[in-house]
Length: 208
Image (cartoon, rainbow, N blue to C red; front, side):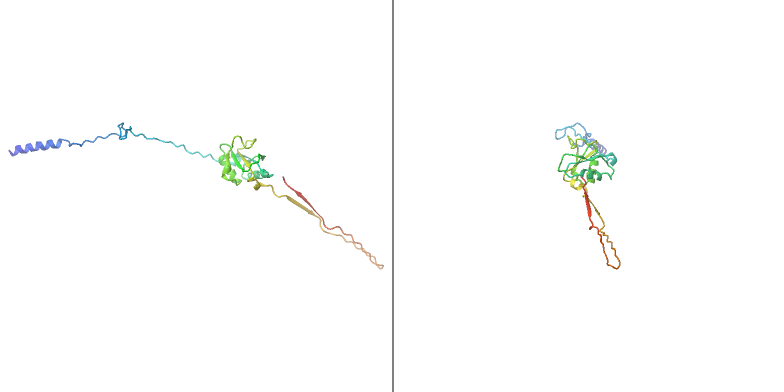
C-alpha cells in the first residue's frame, strides 16, 4: 500500500512540474519590425544630415595680386602715395587712377580674392568693414584687370597726402672789400669800396 501511494504522489508531482505557469511566455520582436507602437506610427526611422566641409581659399602670393588705387577724394597725390605703400610687400601695383568722389573708402575684390583684399586693407590701416565684393556696376570703369580695387575716399585720403612743400634757400656770403692807398709826406688818401649787404634768394617748389 505504501509503495502504491508513493507512486501516485510521484506521478502527480511530475505532472505539476512539466506544466508551464501562466504568463511565463515572453514575445520579443526584432528591432525595426513593422509592428504598431502606442503612438499609432510605424517603426522609427533615422535621419542622416550631411554637412558640407568649409573650404577656405588660400591667400595668393603678393606678386600674383593685381591691385589698383583710385583716388576718390580732393587730396592731390593721395592715390600715388597709397600705391607706393603697397609696393614694399611685393604686390603687383598698377598705376593709380581717379574715381568719383566718395566719403568712405572701400577695398573691392573679385571672387577668390577676399582674403587678399583683407590683407591689403590691413596694410593700409583700413577697417575690416571696408572689404567688400565688387558691386555691379563696378566703382571704377576701367580697373585694368585688377583683382583688388581700392577706392580712396575722403575719410582715409588725408593720411596719404603729398609731402610738404620743399623750400630751397641760396645765400651769398656777407663779405665786403676795403682797399686803402696811402701817399707819403703830404697826407693820406683812403679809398673804401664795399659790396652791398648779403642777399638771399628763396625758391619754393610744390608737388601736385
